[in-house]
Length: 467
Image 1 (cartoon, one colour):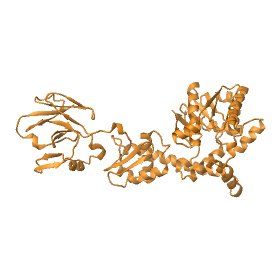
Image 2 (cartoon, helix red, strand yellow; image 1 turned 60 degrees about the horizontal axis):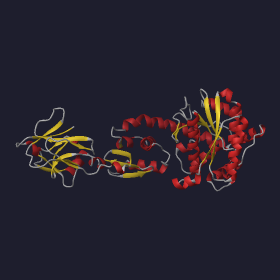
Image 3 (cartoon, one colour; image 1 turned 45 degrees about the horizontal axis):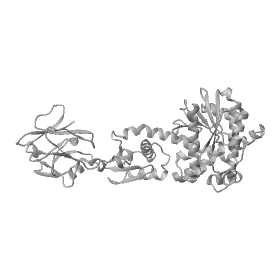
Image 4 (cartoon, helix red, strand yellow; image 1 turned 135 degrees about the vertical axis):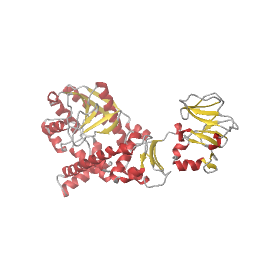
């Protein structure tokens, strides 16, 4: 096992440059073997160890016994030890998560806190080859895509309790970032770890819940994988992992291709070009949509395969179609634009109207601009429009029902709604279009550079402007 661990560490450049390492110590056989192996080779690897135990407050006296055991073990090794406690059941209920998920989140939050406290560059956890195969089978049965079938990565980076896949995981990892999760046992089968513990006389704790088939993962570990080994393939774990390694390699290639063209489809306003997306194979378009979702939400954690397929399907729908996504994110098709944004009800632009007095500037907070009307020609640097035939007060406002604008080319008025349709102003943009108006007669729409011909003939000359 030691040889396998050292090969894995070298291959993935774990602990490169030396430094402090947090060891996640549950008290089970895997984590005890990991601590022993790293402690025995710490000088060779140039690392210093700190152990962390997280008591989930789920198993009463047994959990307290695990905590005490881990503290005594670390004292025997001379390894600094820190125990954290989390009320996982309450957290799960509060956050509407499963107990398993809440426990995992609590562990990684504690790992991060300790890594920051002692300025550790790595957190070593004890996932092994069998864990990896079980995770892949679990994800396969859930209908996961290539990401889920890639298994447990040997190295992962985390920041502020958000897990982010290493960009080069599966091929090479150069200088893992501060706070990397590393898995030195990932190439070791559980049987080798058990032999290692026996050979070194290592004591460890056994979690009784591991023998319960109440949880799906336990069913896979205790029933499904042993049956596959017994009836179909004794080397089932290797077969599963080797297969998914190829899936992961293909997935990384497609990720790179999607990343290379993502910027070309992304407009300055944050929208994606629906026609460009539809022109790519689904495997590329789907990844670009996922990339945009990740940029907006900060994580792909809650985006399931069904969500990604629904996003892809929205490309072929009519303008105005929308889709609610996890994390308070919405996707909307506006003509040929795809917008994926956080819902910001408090930031929504509401209807606004500012009555303008001559020679007084007014700040329009909704748009972040200043507007004015004046009876003397303003500075040439200002965007301006000569308003003639002005017959009443001028205001600057958002659109209203019945708005129209006069064009001499058609010898009459055109409805602003029709004008917006012609200009392909999206539904989500229309409330942010400001215009100078008299009642329902529009004088000037600065952002569209559209001016009424009615106000350019004769009469007393006044000026409108924005800055």
